[in-house]
Image (cartoon, rainbow, N blue to C red; front, side, top):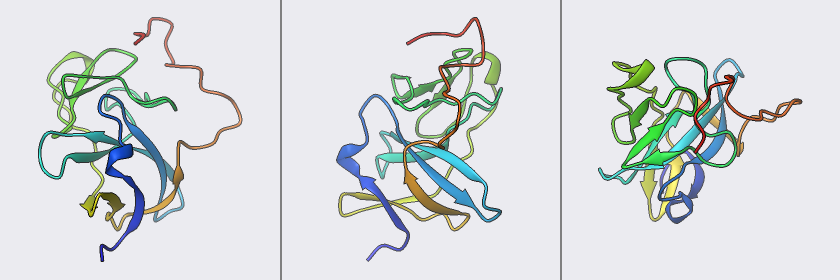
Length: 141
């Protein structure tokens, strides 16, 4: 049996969007994590749900925009490789997304990163709604 909290069945991770869930670190800080499809084994990768250029969420509750195996920042359009987390264009060029360890076993995805505790599906619940990127010149998808 695989150790770690079960997050979701692999088939529930969208092909062209992300699957969002919330974890807690060792200091009880909540963080959002996204699961995305990747062509490399095991077929799913987990990344912190935040652009490295500015604190901009990729997935705001309806899936991160993706194109050709890359996660797109909705604020400036920087594109991050879904498998490596690396960015070679836009404002975030030269940076890499912080990864989160997962295990794929028997058709399910498990959180295997000892730095985090699984809390729930979806994002961090906030009092005020996040209607989109914190920019008046954001990119829409």
